[in-house]
Image (cartoon, rainbow, N blue to C red; front, side, top):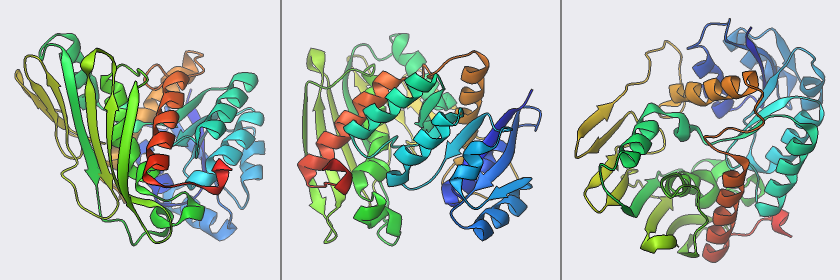
Length: 333
């Protein structure tokens, strides 16, 4: 039986997610409805992807009895209200990263999911890429010995995109793309909370962080050195340095097809598709969609790949980093 999806927001990332679902047969994944704040936008989106229902409000989507799970691709400040609405209407939820604007909101939403007994997952899509799974396998096999250092960065010139730079829209380097190096460090460090976080960076005139550097100190003398920028093109690679060798995650580190390590190169190209995508390697959103389907079928309320406890740890790191750099949002007060 197909997993029946509703799409909340008709923007670019929702478009890429819907296109990625086309990789699978409709017997496995089927988009039933899309909702946007503007009915015309929803209708255009529905026409493009052959979706039968288009709604001009999110409340209508929440009430649709034919939807199992809702993908939320709206801007960051809308994640908490939209995800809450969908969970309370009995829907499972896959919400784009970051799950919420801060720690307080994250705790609130995780509690709603728990009370409603519905599946909720933060869209940490790199976790489900074959390349990430291979990194984990090689470390567990002892190929690079004991992990000592993680180096990861992600940077693009995105200053022309309003949602990336405007405070009211949840803009800033930390929440927009800093999430990816931070989640990579957490992935390698076994979702452990850092002992200490030291961060600094540069701010835009509008009051959000445009670049940042962060050092995360972990138990056992392990360190993560991370950087993100919405002004500069960084190499956007990641390295795991061990006592016996190094694993390199090639560009783009947030959605990689290949890694390199002492035992050789691993490469698993994304499937070819006729769909058009806005962002790098967005076909890879298929992997997180399949994880959602698997979890729901098995009756799980969270994914082992990004459990709620780790989503909360990530929220704590993100909040500390951005506040040390200087970014505060209305939602913080």
